Image (cartoon, rainbow, N blue to C red; front, side, top):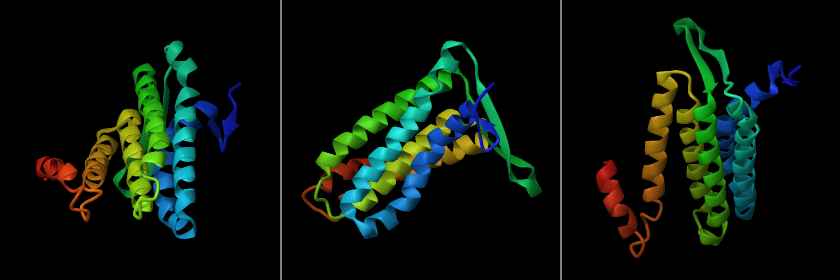
Length: 180
């Protein structure tokens, strides 16, 4: 018998958490930043780790060639459903995204240390990770579209991160030109 959390199996819960945890972290980042800028890094790394661990928990399913598919009603009036589809390829990609993102987050804690806009950086990083995972695990094109647009928006924001600093602004000029 599968372990159930809130009426969903552990695997279904994990599949939803992979992409929802980074978005949740992005949403709470401004509030955490007002309390303690130093804490934002710990929270961001912690949420990235939880997302990666959620992805890792699905590896046994991928090895057995099983999949997780779950849908919930999103906009009832239009009949739109939100869902996750974690087949073996999606599980592998969710792990690649999750673990590389986690390592980047750890590196970023040192690299971005002392930056006055660190809360904004963590917000966009978590939004970026959530959007990438949304693309990987979506079960419909509308969610893929939202994930794709989220990745583009977050990429633009991260490339433009130091737009106020003329010494560092050159890094983002080319990227901003390409992304519009």
